[in-house]
Length: 347
Image (tube, rainbow, N blue to C red; front, side, top):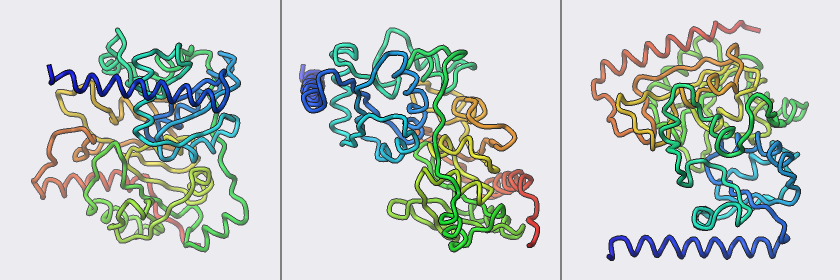
């Protein structure tokens, strides 16, 4: 009895707490307020906002709020000025309580929408659906979250800051060389880190070809152990920064979704999948989350590579301990990437 009673009781209490939060939010912002619970990572919220405006228009929703525990919620929302609802960043505890209330009381009763299709059980096994060859991550927004006709639905493009003289001067002052700068992005919450040695070798080879190298990271939370200068910039500046730099190489992350349409040379690295894949876990592979597969990026500006030694964050398989084989794989991948980077001409 105690085995199931405690988790069940905790879940019910969490749902009741979430229900009370909904009541408070409507008291605070108006009884007719529609609640959009925005939980998830940066890329998931970015894609959610691409479809949100169409959903609002089709359902006649004018009074709404966005509330969630995504730490970059406000920064991503800044890319969509046409989404005018109040944005409330909250704790994981509050986000989970609202999500549990949705599961118990129903979204229609609470006038609440979720941002992730995997957060509530349905009669349809959606984890099985996403194992099909024709299903990609972007399809979950069309089919399950917003119920949109892909042939007719329109998406709202993000709005970035243009390269103005002030930003250009800032970039040049930091050492950026227009069209000859490569920004490395070695961190992702969806892919286990690749050996720093790989990034160092890649960066050194690119330097020999005449490129300036920077590492994109949040120095407050991520360690720069690659030997190249670190950079960090707001999402709204990312298009201008990358188009000025000219080149980007990174592990598949939510930031890749944000810059998918940016006109620069992009190389995106994906993990391998185990032979016996469990569809109930998160996928970050090229077939499911590929920018080209989701029709987010122009194939002329993006190169997508599966890295043999990269692992999904939920992948239980250990990395190879065969160091000579690992070095051989590193070198083959680096050479494949370098093919996309001709020697930079000297000014």
